[in-house]
Image (cartoon, rainbow over all chains, first blue to last red; front, side):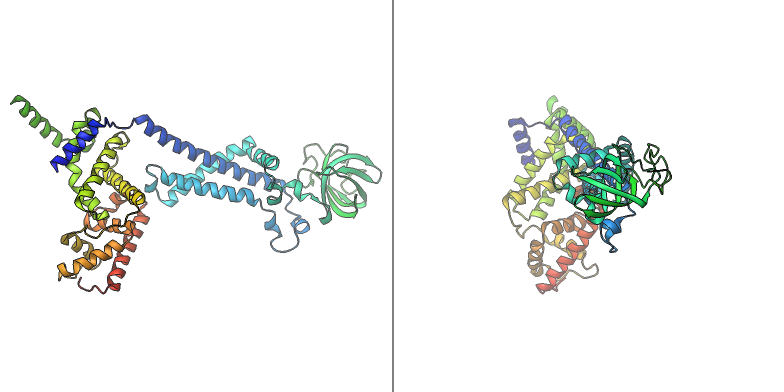
Length: 253
Length: 201
């Protein structure tokens, strides 16, 4: 075997084999950690998008928009982002396992570290409004996104199910004219029995949500009018103080 | 005369050096890598032979490639890891690559009788060695039939007598996975032996 050592050393010298440089190894090592950091960050952004979409939806009306079954609530969940967040979390787990010492960590330890990472990045991402931005970017760039995710717009674009949302074009004595998210104009009839939430502002250019029924192709009978943000139970909930108030919401329409 | 004395002196110095020191010296002068090879050529040779079950010449070729790989990766060596575990890991990865490239099936002449006894003791601690020679051939076949990942953990645990910590470092797997592989490997070996009617151990 002495001969073996001699032959191997000769081969090393003849072929001028040298140890790979340390920076190459370090670059590989740190790029793996960088990829991991980005994975955790994207996962946190996905989680922020889940939080953002959930905060935007009106969870008190799933029976109206999604049927009355026990699963109607679950139909509104933003699965696209939930699945993406879970996949990214799994990817981050395996990336940690693939690091130099990743195999030494227990699953519990890895999950704890990841959870802490998600909390930090998630808080940061929410503060920066990245969840909302991710949702908007997905809406613009992913053609299938609308069919996968119940957004606030899709939730309030179901006149056949009694949910209509959009911007008020003009106001008249019987109600107002509203342009929905597809650009269609509706004549919304608001009679005395309609509940106009305290914070709803029925003035030109305001975005509102209307619960009611589709009476004709472009006529919608309102039972309840809410501001675009929130349920509108408190004055100023939508940030503009309510403006004109409805009959049942206090003030004359 | 002086030169010989000097070389002997250096050799003694290097032989007393730690693995980490030899790694540092090898980066400066490849000649020093010879001392590392001297330390690990026999254990690595046997390890590769046991898991590949290749003939001696083929094992030597693989071993040379492994040492060259170790030399290339010297800057990657992390002193917190045992050098032997790191070297075994490189050998393990190289053998897997070799199998993948050649799509080879292992042969069944990689174990001598004492090694066979160690492996089988893992299955039955109290049983005596009986009719070893006659039975050994059949057992070699059973081991050869096992997938590499199971054969390798049995070799590491019961022939190389590595601890679970060392096995984790060599295989780069968490402790639970290593323990599962060992247990499953023992089960497969036991089943293979039963199926072939081997009752001599």
